[in-house]
Image (cartoon, rainbow, N blue to C red):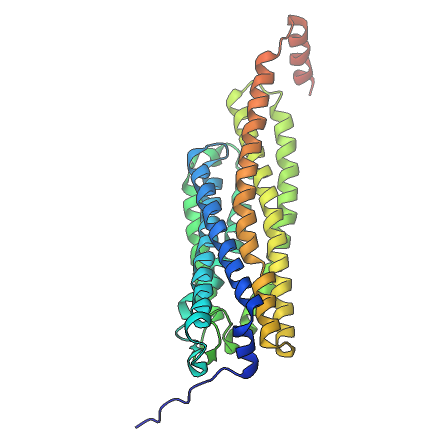
Length: 335
């Protein structure tokens, strides 16, 4: 017969954290942030579904990115509720406060999958913008298929990446909360964080180039008599502007998340449980990013819609004499 497992009990320092009123308040603050972000995510998804200001595939990528945010936030809410439950009902049982890492598997996996999923969807949006810029006539005809194919591919990449991070980890350790990373997987996770930072930097540079190319294309097409070409050029430019703005915000989010996580994992051994818990509760960046990203999406869509209305009104109010019209034709012919 196998001997029963020796229970892991919370240390006096760990109990200090659980008994801290500051830590408890920080946990409720985390829940407020999480529920606020979930509300904003629902509002942003609804806006993306009801407004066709940017093309279908771009809207699909943004929706999948928001679903990654919601995946992370759902796991984050479960995690915080677990800790609050410990504080309220289990402090008199210090040997029952720890969790088996295996029992935390789904919470931990979803936290990681939400973070990495946002990075992979950023890659999908960048690839879509490259192809839309190169194949200006073909890409709009494909409608939602680029979004379906690239989103599916990146979701598969994200799933494979999460499995690789936790590959060959038996998850036999005990952890004080489900948010604490299993010790045997930390190395691979830190390696991915470095790769993710370079990926986000590449996305930003590529989107700057695409934005410049789309601006040049729009200037050329603005003098064209082909209304369809002018419309597709303007749609491509607006989509690129939106993706560029959101990519910049996601790059900043990924950069802060990577730096914070690496610093936290480096300094955690020298911190008391209370210091570690408060630091994680107040400065973990992803919940704040999951508030910022849907807010920026709604602001960006509103800005593009208002800009489009101004352009239409300006076009309606334009008057042009015959001589001016002939001069415009001569300019185009002389190019």
